[in-house]
Image 1 (cartoon, helix red, strand yellow):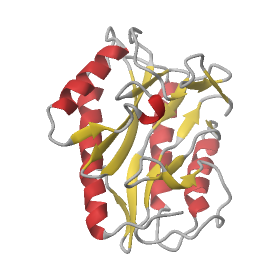
Image 2 (tube, rainbow, N blue to C red; image 1 turned 90 degrees about the vertical axis):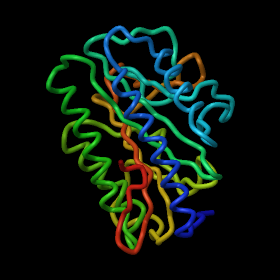
Image 3 (cartoon, helix red, strand yellow; image 1 turned 120 degrees about the vertical axis):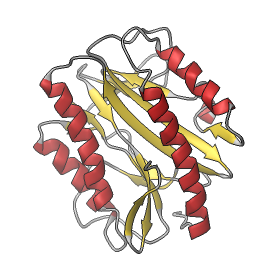
Image 4 (spheres, rainbow, N blue to C red; image 1 turned 45 degrees about the horizontal axis):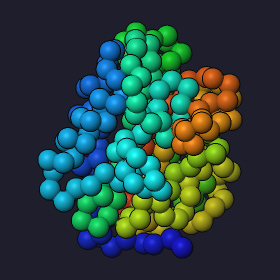
Length: 249
């Protein structure tokens, strides 16, 4: 069931989302050569503990033990912080959610470390661009798969692939609500988008094939062919004036 949010509820999600994106931008500055991914987790937890009535959304969710998901290189989503040291040339994706005042916000971004080949820069740019292409279609009266089509066509036109096994989602009082938002689909199909829907739109884009595998830790999804992957996400409300990016700074 899709839960429509009131204006007051959307403002609460906006606050949660801004806490989340501000935290990610803070952590982004520490994503550099020589830093362990577990150190990013510690920085995140320390920052969150200083905020009043703010909790990390992921820690404890279905047993997940960390505040952050940190996916490196071929890892698509749900990478787990550990003793791994970030190296020049890595792609690091940070996925983070906040629970505040009864509502969730959810965001993600990817960053390259040091000098990377042009094709890697293109992967990051196209993934972020595809997020905004999808957001542009999050309008009252459009169909859900208009978002999906916008993402998929932009990605595939650039020669990359979208992940099928993980999708975006509705968000509000629960971290994951209906509807699911695939990053692939046929334009003009799917449910009709309505004012009051709040969606976490999150393209996950692989440089190679779309298939993923789950690593032995039971959480981390990685590309099956070992190719690089990138991930960007915003929390967006559908309003009478068009898409409203709640996680925008």
